[in-house]
Amino acid sequence: MTAVSGLGVALRRPGGETLPLVEDVSFAVAPGRILGVVGETGAGKTLTMRATLGLSAPALAVTGHLTLPDGDVVDLADRAAVRALLGDRLSVVLQDPLGMLDPLFRVGDQLIEGVCRAGRMTSGEARGRAERLLEAMGFVDVAAVQRLFPHELSGGMAQRVATALAMMARPSLLVLDEPTSALDASVRVEVMRLVRQLAAEERIGVCLVSHDLGVISHFADALMVMYAGRVLEARPADEALHAPAHPYTRALIASSPSLDAPRRRPLPVIHGAPPVPGTWPGGCVFEPRCPRAADRCRGTRPALEPSGAGTVACHYRHDAEDARHVTA
Amino acid sequence: MSQPDDAPILAVQDVSRRYSVRGGVRQALRGVTFTLAANATIAIVGESGAGKSTLTRLIAGFERPSTGAVLVDGAPAAVAPGKVAPVQMVFQHPAEALNRFASVGASIGEPLLRAPISRPERQARVEELLGMVGIDPARARDRPRAFSGGQLQRIVLARALAAEPRLLVCDEPTSALDVSVQAQIVNLLLELQEAKRFACVLVTHDLAVARVLADEVLVLRDGAVAEHTPADAFFEEPRSAYGHDLLRTTAAQTLNAPLRAAERVK
Image 1 (spheres, one colour):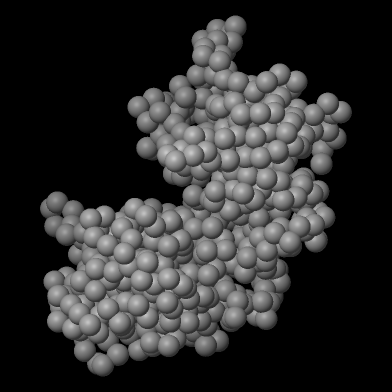
Image 2 (tube, helix red, strand yellow):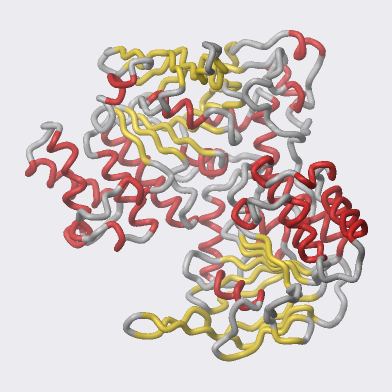
């Protein structure tokens, strides 16, 4: 299990004040499993993941701990220590896969460079692993792909090469940040299928970050719903998607376009916009947009409490059954 | 479909488009033919490289077909300098579609500069357009950077409708937006089309968005029409094998209501 506990990110302001951007986020990813992280722009998904990887901007204060499967614990505030694990036990595929590749080197050389330099593998071992990963990523003529330069790759190829690169060192945790949003539907499904298979085989825990519940619903084992810098619901994916307990999760599901929707009928929407940092409501952060909101929600911020096989931050989490049909 | 007039607003007649590329010719479109009735929406779907963008540029009049004709309201589609184009466009990235040094009000008012109306009239019209897309008219003087992505897409829609076009081309209008914002823009498009009565060409790779907005679906593959089917029939049973494949891959990454665990991709 790779686990993050009590992760917080705050902006340091001149004068010693801090502005919280992410508060008290904890999650765990089992080896070979996929955790889907969803939420609207500004929910703190990317900040959380960057802090987990030691990639936060220097102006941000990070708190929290990262526990690796072998029991090692790293203080996330010690960015250098976390970053030393990156490319080794932690890994990431960014939204723009070409940005991860050096335009001047052939694909094959880039794949082995990192692990060889870190002394993790001999170049012979690394070449063998690179070939296996490229095959697993669906390339047929692996030798030909290795001879290509990044500019010769199509978007889907670049995505698969970048994913193979991220898996070279057999990391404990692989973060995919909106990894496939630039790809065609068919390529996207294919890449995610390959990622899931490879992660299971090599016991790599995956965090799949996306604002698109569609992709996540098909590939994630667990779901973490973020809003206004915190977690509102974290549960096994089937449970969260079939019986969402938080009104925000319900509203997100309802507003996702579906192929069974009737033509020219307006979609249910969540009115308003998420609050920006510094303007978070004192009670429940979702209260101003919530169809279920009551006085209690304005007064007291609900803590994450157990619900089913997961946790939910809502005073009315037990009313999910009767409220299921209420949409904003 | 909301009562279409008889004459098609858009007629694409046996259109082909070739580009010279290093070492030969690339055929981006081949023999594409369809018409679109007033007030109707056609979704153009297909994968990267299918010719969606080329077709969009021809309809908007940015380019001319190599052979065949694109007629908007009976006249060849073309943009003329100094004239407001008869076809207006909405793009994927609204921030890139607006002049970031100009107030959003000025951007929206630009198509009205040549109209025979006074300045206060134009200003009033800009405010009316902003209100119509759900943006506080008092914010007409703000620059684009003061708005979120969803708000900017509303502003782009207001500008596109300022010239009262009879045809609107939307190229992936919601794919850069969050799900919740996407739903708002989809609803706004439905509402505006009802109120303003324009025909719409919707280019998208997202069949779920096409499901809500479109009356007809045109599937492009390798520059040719794989099928052109009324939307309800398409989503029931696509006519072409390729349409089937597209629908299936979309279903493999779309939330279905009610959610069915059995449909998770194996």
